[in-house]
Image (cartoon, rainbow over all chains, first blue to last red; front, side):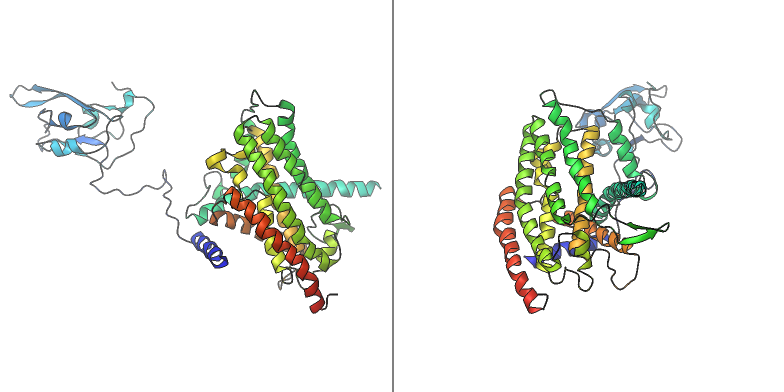
Length: 142
Length: 331
């Protein structure tokens, strides 16, 4: 019994001099892999036009029903999303929408700092999602 | 006469201030060491290395709302924290931090008083701290507080016995109850060597007396929220914490005095006061270390251990000490 007690003490003493793994968050940040499922982004073609064709597949596959959009046709007869909204407050970042997208219009970024002071701030519209993505969503932009 | 009073007042302020200062920083040291032992940095946001954390904690506690529960017995509820704190502060009076020394041409002792019944005084005063705890538990009118208070008093009474018996060995060897005489008796060999058995019993019982891990079930968070001070907030809560940490210092001081040779130096010649503080802080570190290591006892295990293991062991210690003294020529 005494041996076991002494062993316990030696373990804690050894731990005292170990390297600490704590990441001092606001000053230090972890490097996430490019595959990290963070904030969404809507891609563009090389000529700058939007890739999204408004097929609704992302909205259908979404388990938490947080994607809403309205498809429309432009003057060339090409379908596009008239408006596109993701409710980040409801999103579970499962990435199904990205998998479902047939034209690779939707992607996820390693960006994860999305906290804000109002619920409206969590609704991301097309202008917040389209590349080039704004650094931070302007709060109350609705 | 006036000189005596002035010297006493100055000593009072200095010792009280030093103990309070040490106490606040022991809270930080505890959190820091616990953190390091759990491979995390501990508090490090307030000031460099978290050095201002205790001050921030103090300010926070001062500014908190002081809540007295509706059904609480108000007078007792208010008195209880003071009853826990006052005995804690009173015991410091006889802890001998250092020998007689000359300050500004006057001979001054680094302790408040050398009472010829010092150890007895400490035991009697410190056991009064139980009243604060029991009354706090009873007056809060909350089942968690009551259970915490009951457990705490049962625990303190059971371990007080083995603690008192463990000390008898030291008393036999030093032939005195005075804290200063006990230290002087350790000039050659510290009592930790001939009284190692008693030392182990004493330190276990002392940790139990302080309600610290692994004997901290009076405030077992998982079943009793935080025991007898569940209903306390603001400065009343702070007073319980103060009492707890001052008791840690006192107990460490007693262990240093009784077993670790008090202010006697060990190879490296440093001022006696420094040596006393080093030993005291080493004991404090040991208590924090134990807290980081062991899980909590169950209530029946605690009682079994106290009455069936520690108490017989301390009685055996009393029986064998004279034998030992006879063999090694102390008598």
